[in-house]
Amino acid sequence: MSVAAEWLWLLAIAALVIHCSAMAKWIPIQKFWTVYPFIWVLCGMGAVAFGSSRGFPLAHMLVLCSFALIGLTIGMYPTRKLFATWAHEINTGVTRERYDYPRSHLAFCGASVLVMLAVAVLLCH
Image (cartoon, rainbow, N blue to C red; front, side, top):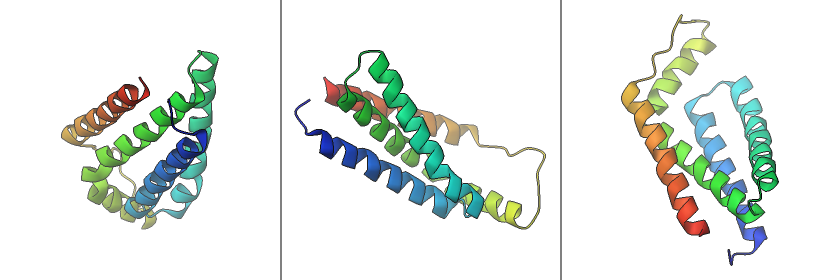
């Protein structure tokens, strides 16, 4: 890959900030949006470490993680209003026995992540 590693780190950080900002807006629960970014940082570090241990270059792992986050953000966009409704219910003390995530939204989210990962793989080769 011919891009400097600094730009790829910037891409990863920008993807993380955009994703976490969107999730903080869609799920306005303070405990969630204060912990959520740290979970993603740990997951990203784990993914990069795992990929590196398997012989993948750091640049490729950064691109894959960044594009996966972008795909996840795009994929969760249709459910944003439902997330906000659930968050409002949780903030008011209402708990449901089950939160029904629409299958079409789940399929769109999965497809978005897979398409973005495919684009990342094509960019890396």
